[in-house]
Amino acid sequence: MDRFQELEAFIAVVDAGGFSAAARRTGKSQPAVSKAIGALEYRLGVALFNRSTRRVTLTDQGQRYFDRMKPLLEEIEAASRELVGSTLDMSGSIRVAAATTFGRLHILPLIPDLLATFPGLEMDLVLSDAMRDMVEDRIDLAIRVGPVDEPDAVVRRVAGTPLVCVGSKSYFEKHGIPETPAELVNHNCLLYGGLRESANWPFVGPKGPFSVAVRGNLSSNSVETIRAGVLAGVGIGLFAKVSLVEELSHPDVITVLDDYVRDVRDVSFIWPKRRFVSVRVRRVTDFLAASLQTRL
Image (tube, rainbow, N blue to C red; front, side):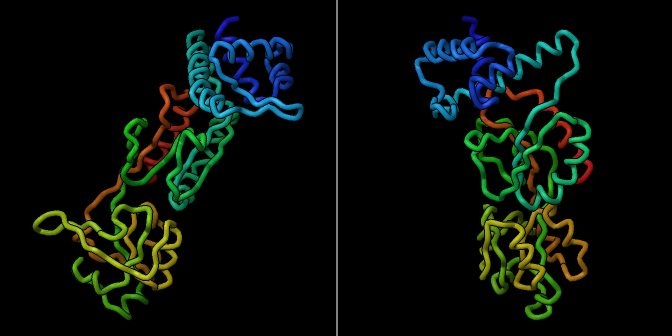
């Protein structure tokens, strides 16, 4: 049997959730679909599906094979459509991951225009400050602020955002405003666990870059928590500026140590560790990148 037909049958069974549904979707008979899957499993020497009378699910080997082969099939189909001059099909789902605050402030407002531009698109937006495994969580595109430690991934820098050090008027009325970074040792510094500088904040002085070890009574892996702590007058926070677009216009929030805070964080788009990335993911990436560059 043709290997491409085997692959098409495999993808159809996964997407449709069963052999009968895949047969209806592809216009082939169920025995033909079953034969194609059997030939594929025989050729690979592994079982791709767990079969029962109620449901069909992927084995671990099947899941890994699906994660690698579906983008490849999409590339082949897209190349074929482009070759014959057909309109690019942008229907289907895409899963995008972003940090909670950044996603709420900067990605969510773009979704209406994105879906209006590509009406057949189904968007799954995953907002979490936790660093996600893109392959395991089936993330098509991740948007991150800060260093990217994934040497095998495809990384596209979109913009840069400076760091800012901020506190509330109520906090500074009680504890005073630090004039130099060294004075932070006498202040309550709120620590975001996702930053590498969570205990050592970076600054630049006349002699060059240096860091200051800071401490505080509140730390969190959520930017939202640290932002709320600053507004409540608990302490001082160090943020990427894109996370504070609302607070920086708040009358009770004050930036401090501006002459010493020079670091810039990259805003990057990341594709997972795959050889092929679907045209749909590339088109969504281009749309979001262009939109963000006008916002940041």
